[in-house]
Image (cartoon, rainbow, N blue to C red; front, side):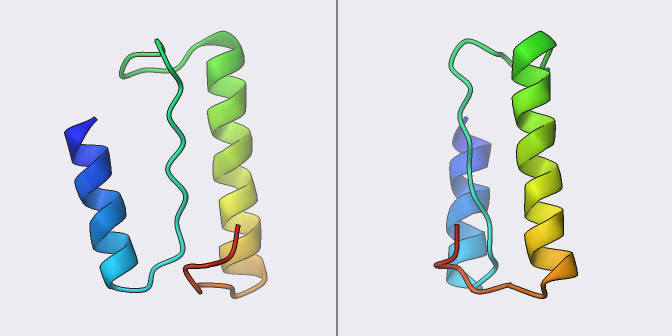
Length: 60
C-alpha cells in the first residue's frame, strides 16, 4: 500500500491525472467483482485521459 501512496503523491506533484482506488481485502491481485471494479476504473481513466485529453489533476 505504501508504494501506491508514494505513486499517487508523485503523480500529484507532477500534475498527472490519477485516481487511487483501494479495494479492502483484495490483496495484490484482483479476482471476481474486485477485478471487474478495477478494470472498469482503468478503462474509465483511459477513456477520460487519453480519448478526451484530460490530464488535469482535479478531474474525477
